[in-house]
Image (cartoon, rainbow, N blue to C red):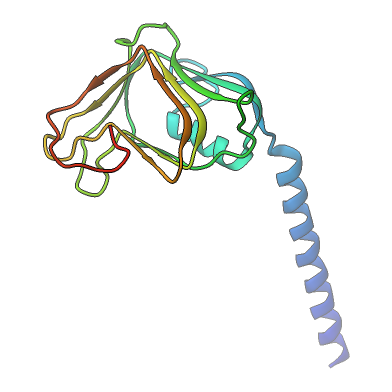
Length: 173
């Protein structure tokens, strides 16, 4: 019976040590974002816009962040929650790497429940520049859906393409 208790203590110590290691690894290797990153194309910082947003969500920002999106059509539905660290100085910008809005397109086919291309959920200090946004569904064709107090959102020099949309959603473009 005594050896069983010893084995249980060793197992608990091993589990505790493993937990401490995982937490320490997360703290050491999860650094907040700051600077310029690329999305898509050859040797990118991030292979997709979704991957970049997932990293932002987990790590937050500690300085201004710019994502230069390389030319192409990205079939991705973007959903961005609150990002830790954003301020009027520590902003997040998504922009076409070529500064040509026709070279980089974010496109989806809307559905009745996922009718947007970009959803910002309480996200602050986010800008989209020189990009094209396209939703091809005639019945569910929202481009931007802003909820839960989004502030300091900017959209500039971009192309918005969507069939006529007759259903009204609050804070939807």
